[in-house]
Length: 134
Image 1 (cartoon, rainbow, N blue to C red):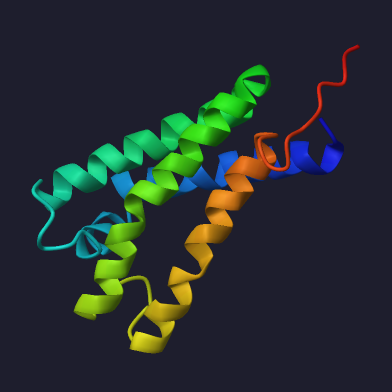
Image 2: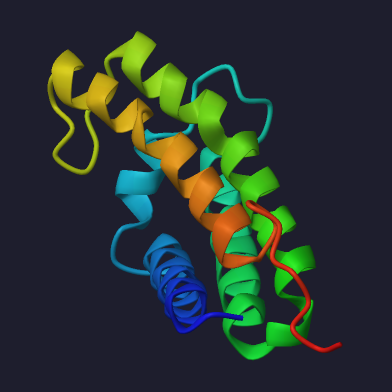
C-alpha cells in the first residue's frame, strides 16, 4: 500500500471515529435533525446505531490494515446507505450543522460520492491496488 493511501485510510478512519463519537455525545441533537421523518426507526435510536457503526468501521479501518478492502467496501456501502437521509435533508429543508440554506444542503450532496470514492480508494478497491508481495 502506498504511503498516500495509508494516510488516506488512517485519516478517513479517524474522521469516522470522531463523527461516530459526536453522534453519541455533543452533536446528538444535530444528527437527530437529519433523520428523515419518513424513516421507520426512532431518530435517537438511528443516531446512536449509526454512531456505533461509524466508530466500529473507522476503528477497523485504522486498526486492521490487512482487512482494508473489506472495511473500505463496508464504509462505501455505509455512505451509500445514509445518502437518502442527506437527500431528505435537502428536499425537506431541514437545518442542521449550519446547513441552513437550500444551496448549502445541495452542495453537501456532492460530497457524499467523494466519501464513497475515498473509502474505495483508501481500501485499495478503486482503482484496484495490486498486491505488492510477489
